[in-house]
Length: 258
Image 1 (tube, helix red, strand yellow):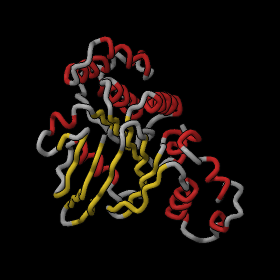
Image 2: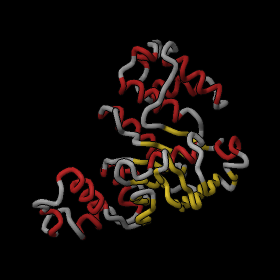
Image 3: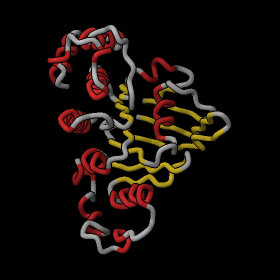
């Protein structure tokens, strides 16, 4: 479904992506993990055409994104970390514009307003929405088209618990329906509940790419070390009840976290 080969990108002389090679088969749900600044968002933005790579190749369903950008990205739907919509349009008007652009029937607008809990906000202008409400609108826009490849960049950021449940219920249904998902996150629970594979980025390069059996606890430790440092890290000694084999057993195989 998606093949990225030798992808490179620099900003102001700083190499952000340093030869990314990534292949995702149709129906996979892949978590793209790593610290801030490692290149996760830039990778997604290159795939959807919001950033132009310096080198490399992107193929979506066998179509070269550089040579046929419109055709290549037609099967994609993208949920950004922070979406920008016209301030004066209402929620319903915004979704109607997206529906027309994506050639989606008008009934889908009502469907997403209901599914994303936007009924009470449907006639409110975007300029009067809170940050979380705008992200919920972005979520509805991302689910409007019947896409084959969904890209989510920090999808649970800025969402309240109710909206997060809506998002991941819909995402898990997409996974069951055989759609392809690629998402970034800093939340290990997102990985457990949605991913069938983990790709770990470090300094613009892929450090590991594992399918089937993961080490979610290892990723949790990485986040803990970044936050707290290495002092008195008991979880690294193997005596934590969720450490080692217990964690591996909990997330062994796609069925365990589907």
